[in-house]
Length: 477
Image (cartoon, rainbow, N blue to C red):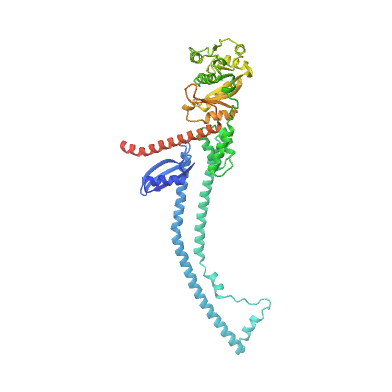
């Protein structure tokens, strides 16, 4: 999460600054009128339930940084004046020292002349000549002699101390910001494995994968494989990897036929999907090539809908008794090109669930079992359904209710993590039209569009709520 406070003359200018600084994905956290105008607090990748303490910390750090910059700007004119005064003092001291040194040199020259004319000065003149010839006397120019003496030591020490304190405070602030960034990056990488930190770009990709509704395990694997440092290029890498990870069945049921059983929870759309498959196959190969079988003898009027399909399409319907043998029934239907088996949607706690699962297992590999995944269900429910029907020997899955869902991430995660090929996709109740063969690229593109639409809706709803909140408070008062 990245948060920042903006101040502008009006709300429109403030929102423009937010868009320029944080981009179109920024969320308006709060807004209020101040003496300077409108103050807006915006954040990127903001989650209200967990990011409130970090938001306050970032805003506090930003305020401290602005105060430090203000103090530095205020000190600048004073330091300039002090330096000018010290330079003027140094120049005056330099001029005075040059005059004093010139006077000393003139006196030394007069002494030399007097010593050369009279003998009383001979001892004084002879004394410096008694020094060894290897150590000649060094003559220093007035400027070189007086510069060290004219340096204002106390003022320079004060300036060095102020600069050192400012640098120390700045280093502390940078360290705190670095720690905050490391904490956010490491925790955004994986909520269950904080020992593996990701780069900032990878953490951004992980957050976008969460917007798509992907499972954290799959999002971790995708984000860890991102190599580009540019966000747009990294996102294109993510979309490509998503397409490659989604398995799609190579065989087409509507053309090749076979024996197919649809399994899944109650209300997943198994019976309606069987009606669509049967209608499509009858249109291609005729009514004599299709047979329908139902295992649902546990609910009242359970197979009435399937019986209506068989009557309309002109295909036979076989109802398996409770203690019947599915293998024997399938042996009698070997002459059919397509045999569709409808199972009962039973809870795992139902005593008949194990009986039906045993029948499906006994049918062997000649009966392909397709798990029906309703896209309107939660990700955990889809995972649980997969675990329940996995012992039957699943050959693929079918995505149903695409027209009713608002996120594809959960179903795509089940298919990708379990390597269960997507065989068919249904997107409406119309028979036989609303059934299609899947394409990984289309599924990923549609998932991204759904995520963007959902994010836009929530941002608009949040903005309207924040805008109406002050008015509501005023009216209440």
